[in-house]
Image 1 (cartoon, helix red, strand yellow):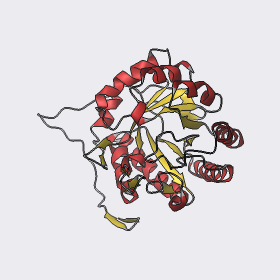
Image 2 (cartoon, one colour; image 1 turned 90 degrees about the vertical axis):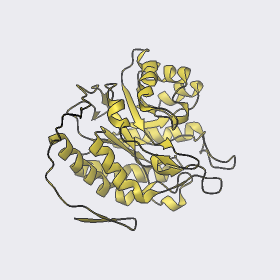
Image 3 (tube, one colour; image 1 turned 30 degrees about the vertical axis):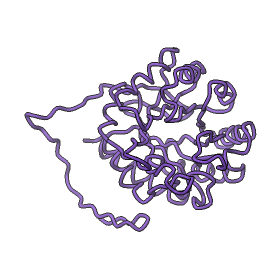
Image 4 (cartoon, one colour; image 1 turned 180 degrees about the vertical axis):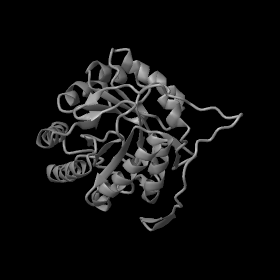
Length: 305
Protein backbone atom coordinates (compact mmCIF):
# COMPACT_ATOMS: atom_id res chain seq x y z
CA UNK A 1 0.00 0.00 0.00
CA UNK A 2 1.40 3.40 -0.94
CA UNK A 3 0.27 6.79 0.24
CA UNK A 4 1.46 10.12 -1.12
CA UNK A 5 0.88 13.08 1.19
CA UNK A 6 2.33 16.52 0.66
CA UNK A 7 5.16 15.18 -1.44
CA UNK A 8 6.20 12.50 1.05
CA UNK A 9 6.02 8.91 -0.18
CA UNK A 10 4.82 6.64 2.60
CA UNK A 11 4.93 2.88 2.08
CA UNK A 12 3.21 0.43 4.39
CA UNK A 13 3.02 -3.35 4.35
CA UNK A 14 -0.11 -4.90 5.74
CA UNK A 15 0.61 -7.39 8.53
CA UNK A 16 -1.56 -9.26 10.96
CA UNK A 17 -1.00 -7.73 14.39
CA UNK A 18 -0.41 -10.09 17.29
CA UNK A 19 -0.38 -9.11 20.95
CA UNK A 20 3.12 -8.87 22.39
CA UNK A 21 3.57 -10.93 25.54
CA UNK A 22 6.86 -11.15 27.40
CA UNK A 23 8.17 -11.65 30.91
CA UNK A 24 9.80 -8.24 31.18
CA UNK A 25 7.02 -6.05 29.74
CA UNK A 26 4.00 -4.60 31.44
CA UNK A 27 0.92 -2.98 29.96
CA UNK A 28 -0.64 0.32 30.97
CA UNK A 29 -4.32 -0.51 31.39
CA UNK A 30 -7.10 2.06 31.52
CA UNK A 31 -10.22 0.53 33.03
CA UNK A 32 -12.63 3.16 31.72
CA UNK A 33 -12.88 6.56 30.09
CA UNK A 34 -15.08 9.29 31.54
CA UNK A 35 -18.44 9.25 29.78
CA UNK A 36 -20.15 12.48 28.81
CA UNK A 37 -21.72 14.14 25.79
CA UNK A 38 -20.93 17.35 23.94
CA UNK A 39 -23.94 17.87 21.74
CA UNK A 40 -24.08 14.69 19.67
CA UNK A 41 -20.46 13.79 20.39
CA UNK A 42 -19.98 11.10 23.02
CA UNK A 43 -16.94 9.99 24.99
CA UNK A 44 -16.29 6.72 26.76
CA UNK A 45 -14.48 3.42 26.35
CA UNK A 46 -16.75 2.21 23.54
CA UNK A 47 -17.20 5.60 21.84
CA UNK A 48 -15.99 6.13 18.26
CA UNK A 49 -13.02 8.35 17.43
CA UNK A 50 -14.15 11.98 17.48
CA UNK A 51 -12.70 15.03 15.75
CA UNK A 52 -12.22 18.63 16.82
CA UNK A 53 -11.82 20.53 13.57
CA UNK A 54 -12.05 24.04 12.19
CA UNK A 55 -9.92 27.09 11.41
CA UNK A 56 -7.26 28.35 13.77
CA UNK A 57 -8.98 31.72 14.00
CA UNK A 58 -12.37 33.11 13.02
CA UNK A 59 -11.18 35.40 10.21
CA UNK A 60 -14.62 36.25 8.84
CA UNK A 61 -18.14 34.85 8.66
CA UNK A 62 -17.98 33.49 5.10
CA UNK A 63 -14.84 31.45 5.71
CA UNK A 64 -16.11 30.04 9.00
CA UNK A 65 -19.43 28.96 7.49
CA UNK A 66 -17.68 27.49 4.46
CA UNK A 67 -15.49 25.35 6.70
CA UNK A 68 -18.42 24.37 8.90
CA UNK A 69 -20.49 23.42 5.87
CA UNK A 70 -17.80 21.08 4.57
CA UNK A 71 -17.24 19.54 8.00
CA UNK A 72 -20.99 18.99 8.29
CA UNK A 73 -21.08 17.31 4.86
CA UNK A 74 -18.21 14.99 5.76
CA UNK A 75 -19.54 14.09 9.20
CA UNK A 76 -22.89 13.13 7.70
CA UNK A 77 -21.34 11.18 4.84
CA UNK A 78 -18.91 9.28 7.08
CA UNK A 79 -20.96 9.34 10.31
CA UNK A 80 -18.18 11.15 12.15
CA UNK A 81 -18.54 12.84 15.53
CA UNK A 82 -17.23 16.39 14.96
CA UNK A 83 -16.81 19.43 17.20
CA UNK A 84 -16.24 22.68 15.32
CA UNK A 85 -13.35 24.76 16.67
CA UNK A 86 -12.34 28.33 16.10
CA UNK A 87 -10.50 30.88 18.23
CA UNK A 88 -12.49 34.08 18.67
CA UNK A 89 -9.29 35.88 19.63
CA UNK A 90 -5.62 34.89 19.45
CA UNK A 91 -3.94 36.34 22.50
CA UNK A 92 -0.72 34.38 22.03
CA UNK A 93 1.02 35.50 18.84
CA UNK A 94 4.72 35.61 17.99
CA UNK A 95 4.68 39.28 16.97
CA UNK A 96 2.85 42.38 18.14
CA UNK A 97 1.93 42.96 14.48
CA UNK A 98 0.19 39.58 14.09
CA UNK A 99 -3.57 39.51 13.47
CA UNK A 100 -5.53 38.66 16.61
CA UNK A 101 -9.16 38.67 15.50
CA UNK A 102 -12.19 40.50 14.17
CA UNK A 103 -13.58 41.46 17.60
CA UNK A 104 -14.69 39.23 20.44
CA UNK A 105 -18.46 39.40 20.13
CA UNK A 106 -18.40 39.37 16.34
CA UNK A 107 -16.37 36.15 16.30
CA UNK A 108 -18.38 34.53 19.09
CA UNK A 109 -21.62 35.30 17.26
CA UNK A 110 -20.23 33.49 14.21
CA UNK A 111 -19.44 30.46 16.37
CA UNK A 112 -22.99 30.54 17.71
CA UNK A 113 -24.30 30.74 14.13
CA UNK A 114 -22.27 27.64 13.21
CA UNK A 115 -23.80 25.78 16.14
CA UNK A 116 -27.32 26.90 15.24
CA UNK A 117 -27.03 26.34 11.49
CA UNK A 118 -25.42 22.91 11.54
CA UNK A 119 -26.47 21.58 14.97
CA UNK A 120 -22.76 21.06 15.60
CA UNK A 121 -21.11 21.64 19.00
CA UNK A 122 -18.45 24.37 18.99
CA UNK A 123 -15.21 25.00 20.89
CA UNK A 124 -13.15 28.11 21.51
CA UNK A 125 -10.23 28.98 23.76
CA UNK A 126 -10.12 31.41 26.64
CA UNK A 127 -7.03 33.23 27.89
CA UNK A 128 -8.06 35.13 31.00
CA UNK A 129 -10.50 34.52 33.81
CA UNK A 130 -12.71 37.42 32.71
CA UNK A 131 -13.04 35.89 29.22
CA UNK A 132 -14.73 32.75 30.49
CA UNK A 133 -18.22 34.02 31.23
CA UNK A 134 -18.53 35.80 27.88
CA UNK A 135 -17.30 32.87 25.78
CA UNK A 136 -19.44 30.38 27.69
CA UNK A 137 -22.61 32.08 26.40
CA UNK A 138 -21.79 31.04 22.83
CA UNK A 139 -19.99 27.67 22.85
CA UNK A 140 -20.11 24.09 24.14
CA UNK A 141 -16.43 23.56 24.99
CA UNK A 142 -13.93 25.94 26.58
CA UNK A 143 -10.32 25.27 25.69
CA UNK A 144 -7.38 26.13 27.93
CA UNK A 145 -4.33 26.99 25.77
CA UNK A 146 -1.14 25.04 26.43
CA UNK A 147 0.81 27.99 27.82
CA UNK A 148 -1.97 28.54 30.38
CA UNK A 149 -2.63 24.96 31.46
CA UNK A 150 -1.26 25.55 34.98
CA UNK A 151 -3.34 28.69 35.64
CA UNK A 152 -5.48 27.66 38.59
CA UNK A 153 -8.00 30.51 38.48
CA UNK A 154 -8.55 30.12 34.73
CA UNK A 155 -9.08 26.35 35.03
CA UNK A 156 -11.44 26.82 37.97
CA UNK A 157 -13.47 29.48 36.17
CA UNK A 158 -13.82 27.26 33.11
CA UNK A 159 -14.89 24.32 35.27
CA UNK A 160 -17.51 26.37 37.08
CA UNK A 161 -19.38 27.01 33.82
CA UNK A 162 -20.34 23.33 33.61
CA UNK A 163 -19.23 23.24 29.98
CA UNK A 164 -16.76 20.64 28.76
CA UNK A 165 -13.17 21.84 29.21
CA UNK A 166 -10.34 20.86 26.88
CA UNK A 167 -6.96 21.33 28.57
CA UNK A 168 -3.96 21.41 26.26
CA UNK A 169 -0.74 20.05 27.73
CA UNK A 170 1.90 22.74 28.02
CA UNK A 171 4.99 22.30 25.88
CA UNK A 172 7.02 22.18 29.11
CA UNK A 173 4.72 19.91 31.11
CA UNK A 174 5.19 16.21 31.86
CA UNK A 175 2.17 14.11 30.75
CA UNK A 176 1.60 12.84 34.28
CA UNK A 177 1.26 16.39 35.56
CA UNK A 178 -1.89 16.84 33.50
CA UNK A 179 -3.69 14.99 36.28
CA UNK A 180 -3.06 18.06 38.44
CA UNK A 181 -4.50 20.40 35.82
CA UNK A 182 -7.57 18.19 35.44
CA UNK A 183 -8.00 18.12 39.21
CA UNK A 184 -8.38 21.91 39.25
CA UNK A 185 -11.40 21.63 36.94
CA UNK A 186 -12.79 18.53 38.65
CA UNK A 187 -12.64 20.31 42.01
CA UNK A 188 -15.50 22.52 40.80
CA UNK A 189 -17.67 19.40 40.38
CA UNK A 190 -17.21 19.39 36.61
CA UNK A 191 -15.76 16.13 35.26
CA UNK A 192 -16.41 16.89 31.59
CA UNK A 193 -12.70 17.17 30.83
CA UNK A 194 -10.57 16.47 27.75
CA UNK A 195 -6.76 16.36 27.82
CA UNK A 196 -4.85 17.23 24.65
CA UNK A 197 -1.29 16.36 23.62
CA UNK A 198 0.22 19.10 21.42
CA UNK A 199 3.96 18.46 21.54
CA UNK A 200 6.90 19.17 23.83
CA UNK A 201 9.60 21.79 23.38
CA UNK A 202 12.77 20.28 21.91
CA UNK A 203 15.47 22.90 22.08
CA UNK A 204 14.57 26.13 20.33
CA UNK A 205 11.95 26.52 17.56
CA UNK A 206 10.98 22.85 17.59
CA UNK A 207 8.52 20.40 19.12
CA UNK A 208 8.49 16.63 19.45
CA UNK A 209 5.72 14.25 20.52
CA UNK A 210 6.42 11.52 23.05
CA UNK A 211 3.59 9.06 22.50
CA UNK A 212 4.16 7.53 25.93
CA UNK A 213 2.19 10.55 27.05
CA UNK A 214 -1.04 9.21 25.53
CA UNK A 215 -1.46 6.20 27.84
CA UNK A 216 0.03 8.20 30.71
CA UNK A 217 -2.63 10.90 30.42
CA UNK A 218 -5.30 8.24 29.86
CA UNK A 219 -4.60 6.94 33.36
CA UNK A 220 -6.51 10.00 34.63
CA UNK A 221 -9.68 8.43 33.22
CA UNK A 222 -10.35 11.44 30.99
CA UNK A 223 -10.48 11.26 27.16
CA UNK A 224 -7.17 12.06 25.46
CA UNK A 225 -6.96 14.07 22.24
CA UNK A 226 -4.02 14.48 19.86
CA UNK A 227 -3.51 17.91 18.30
CA UNK A 228 -2.23 16.93 14.86
CA UNK A 229 -1.53 20.47 13.69
CA UNK A 230 -0.03 22.45 16.59
CA UNK A 231 2.29 19.56 17.44
CA UNK A 232 3.94 20.12 14.05
CA UNK A 233 4.69 23.79 14.67
CA UNK A 234 8.16 25.27 14.57
CA UNK A 235 7.42 28.02 17.12
CA UNK A 236 8.47 31.53 16.05
CA UNK A 237 10.82 29.98 13.49
CA UNK A 238 9.61 31.77 10.35
CA UNK A 239 10.65 35.37 10.78
CA UNK A 240 8.26 36.55 13.48
CA UNK A 241 5.64 33.86 12.90
CA UNK A 242 5.52 30.14 13.59
CA UNK A 243 6.54 27.75 10.86
CA UNK A 244 5.57 24.11 10.65
CA UNK A 245 5.96 20.70 9.05
CA UNK A 246 2.51 19.83 7.74
CA UNK A 247 3.96 16.97 5.66
CA UNK A 248 4.20 14.87 8.83
CA UNK A 249 0.55 15.33 9.82
CA UNK A 250 -0.78 12.00 8.60
CA UNK A 251 1.91 9.67 9.97
CA UNK A 252 1.91 11.47 13.31
CA UNK A 253 -1.87 11.34 13.58
CA UNK A 254 -1.78 7.65 12.73
CA UNK A 255 0.76 7.07 15.47
CA UNK A 256 -1.46 8.89 17.96
CA UNK A 257 -4.49 6.80 17.04
CA UNK A 258 -2.39 3.64 17.33
CA UNK A 259 -1.26 4.85 20.77
CA UNK A 260 -4.89 5.01 21.88
CA UNK A 261 -6.24 8.57 21.65
CA UNK A 262 -9.98 9.12 21.89
CA UNK A 263 -10.05 12.14 19.58
CA UNK A 264 -8.01 14.05 17.02
CA UNK A 265 -7.73 17.84 16.80
CA UNK A 266 -7.18 19.22 13.29
CA UNK A 267 -7.08 22.83 12.20
CA UNK A 268 -8.41 23.13 8.66
CA UNK A 269 -8.63 26.06 6.23
CA UNK A 270 -9.88 26.47 2.64
CA UNK A 271 -6.51 28.00 1.67
CA UNK A 272 -3.86 27.54 4.38
CA UNK A 273 -1.34 29.70 2.53
CA UNK A 274 -3.61 32.71 3.02
CA UNK A 275 -4.58 31.91 6.62
CA UNK A 276 -3.99 34.76 9.04
CA UNK A 277 -2.53 32.43 11.66
CA UNK A 278 -0.80 29.03 11.62
CA UNK A 279 -0.61 28.99 7.83
CA UNK A 280 2.20 26.42 7.88
CA UNK A 281 0.31 23.71 9.74
CA UNK A 282 -3.40 23.98 8.94
CA UNK A 283 -4.76 21.14 6.82
CA UNK A 284 -6.38 22.08 3.49
CA UNK A 285 -10.13 21.72 3.96
CA UNK A 286 -10.41 19.48 0.89
CA UNK A 287 -8.17 16.89 2.59
CA UNK A 288 -10.13 16.57 5.82
CA UNK A 289 -12.42 13.79 4.60
CA UNK A 290 -9.58 11.55 3.44
CA UNK A 291 -7.53 12.03 6.59
CA UNK A 292 -10.54 11.48 8.86
CA UNK A 293 -11.54 8.34 6.98
CA UNK A 294 -8.08 6.80 7.39
CA UNK A 295 -7.86 7.66 11.07
CA UNK A 296 -11.28 6.23 11.80
CA UNK A 297 -10.37 2.99 10.01
CA UNK A 298 -7.18 2.73 12.03
CA UNK A 299 -9.06 3.44 15.27
CA UNK A 300 -11.53 0.66 14.45
CA UNK A 301 -8.59 -1.68 13.88
CA UNK A 302 -6.85 -0.73 17.13
CA UNK A 303 -9.99 -1.08 19.26
CA UNK A 304 -10.71 -4.51 17.77
CA UNK A 305 -7.37 -5.99 18.92
